Image (cartoon, rainbow, N blue to C red; front, side, top):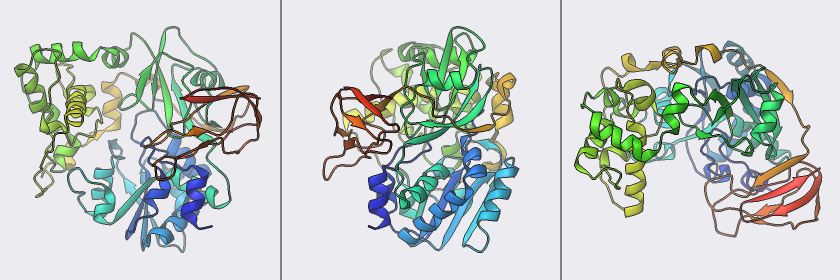
Amino acid sequence: MNLIEQVRIAGVVGAGGGGFPTYVKISSKADVLIANGAECEPLLHKDAAVMENFAQYLVRGMQLSMEAIGAKEGFVGIKGKNKNAIEVVKSACKGLPIKVFILGDYYPAGDEFDLVYTITGRLIPPGGIPIQVGVVVNNVETLMNIAKAEQGIPVIKKTLTVTGAVKNPCTVTVPVGITYRDCIEIAGGLTMDNAVLFIGGMMMGQVTDDFDTPVTKTSTGVVVLPRNHIVSQCRLLPRQSMAKIGKSACDQCRYCTELCPRFLLGYQVEPHQVMRSLAFTATGEDHWNQFAALCCSCGLCTLFACPEGLFPKETCDNAKDQIKKMGVKLSFNKDIKPHPLREGRRVPVKKLIKKLDVEGYNVPAPYIGEVNKVKRINLLLKQAAGVPNKPLVKVGDRVKEGQQVGEIPNGSLGAVVHSPIDGVVVSVDSEKICIEK
């Protein structure tokens, strides 16, 4: 069995948030492989923990991937502040065509467009992907999982950070399907009532107060904040209210655009122009603007750049949704030239943490290893780009840890799921399989 089939059967997906099935990526041909360990979401430390504790797996995954795609060079992008990770990975790379590339502590260093340009000097075409410039990018945990797939080990565990308003912030490896309620208990419980969860981080993550949301293969961490925190209030505001406020208050100062990382790379992303479109539409109605199409939704414009506390990122999200819904075909300037002030306009994570008013939560979240004390898991049938799994089990079936319990229809994009525990199937529906020990 070749590596591509091993990775497909193991259900490996992008572990940094995107969730693209990895067997597709390593079926491509490229001359450069980049391991993304930038981890720029404030307060999260998952990637650093993976590199520090599983460097041999990471490097083995890179070797296998480079062979598969035909790459001659490999780079591991790590922020200079993660000194332990740098030391461990450098040691694991000795004698191999893999180098550690030191990144600055700015946001969003992990954006693929920014990372590819920073490391290789290549600019991905507008609306394109790294393979178009001969590069494959994978998260460091994804590469670790590729090495495990070679050994026949499926993706049934997830490393993530649990931090914010919890008693013992930590980074931990847990079974896929465990709830965030269980994760918070592992971190000692909450330090306050009426909390909100930022699953995947404050900038780009999902905001919810549903503590029973299950961990998936793409989970990177959870930041717990009080509901009355400024970031919680901002992210929880209804989209229609955001549009009304933006329509009445935006004075076209351009700060959102001038600090946009994609604009600074030379792409046609101008959030202030998208905000301008609010003034020419009936409030709350759907609208679109082509200057939103290449936005990476990093949230910097909303949570850092805007001096009036408005919502350019969310306005761009709405416009992108409408562009997709309407099937609008856009054309972009292909003559991309990075802004001459790009380096000087990068946003240091320390300044971002201060602006977000979470300095009190900026504490270590040490890796505490694996925790498998879980009685029930909720295994989502869709945990990757593409179509959901079709269940292979029914209520009452006994399953073993690592057993495949879902399948992707032939010819469809997706990633199969496996049971993370020994147990009994207690329920199956169109969204999830519940298994109890």
